Image 1: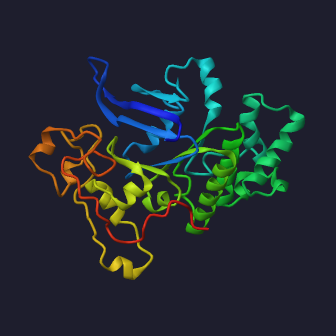
Image 2: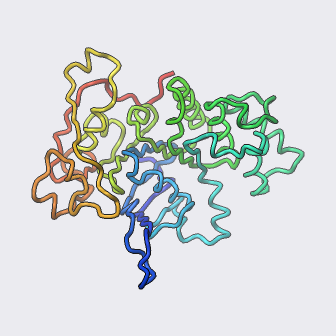
Image 3: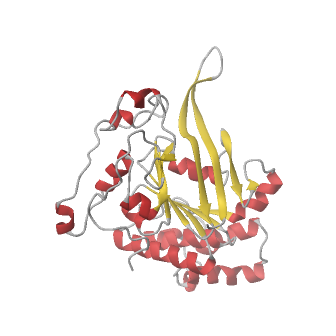
Length: 341
């Protein structure tokens, strides 16, 4: 077993919405993350996937305590991030860094590349001004940027180059964990492959651990060692990449997998397609019992009254479903747990 670098224990985040004019308290709660637990192994990549609005980005922000949880714990090498004091957080946060979805909006348009990358180092007083520029050039070269462009501004770079700047800024504090929140969804397909290759090369050379958040299971397939599938604030299936992609058992996971385009038309010809009906329920008032039951083709009366636990029901990996599929292959390309170069 790989040592755990991060362990999330029953994380919950509810956002209050609206206020009662008489009682001065929230009238409802948005249950963005509702009891999520997982373990990230040292040097491994955990892919968190699901539809928009399922809570995966909120979960990523909870790990570094960018937002305060309603309850739950996050252990970083055994130390509880949620119980840390302000001084302890200053010491812990450099170990968890972020790469965000939009590489343009996360960079200050008035700051040069040198300013954007050097700012974290100045805040934590890692280098003096004499060595700062040298470190910035080194980081730019590491992520595939020309160090001579150190004084350029974000608008002078392409989308892929701006995302490389974001990666360089995340590396500035020598982190152990990087939370990548949809880091390639705003990029062209060819550029996506380049960024995925860069992330994997950095992981191999620096020993990084990744939490890779995405809605595209096809992208996660090429980089993740482990996968957690989220639906409406909860994890419904988790396991290694081979478990989830080759032996998916939850109806929701199988529906997501069946939506991935298949490159080989011969392979995709006999492929089973699962089409979900209805809309995702509101996280303010989720369904009773199993949250997926309103869209599930296998739902029965038991699903409305009893919430399924996330346990192994004989599939070889945990599944939150009373009536899981047999885990047979859907058809299509086999799992490939590395990017295509």
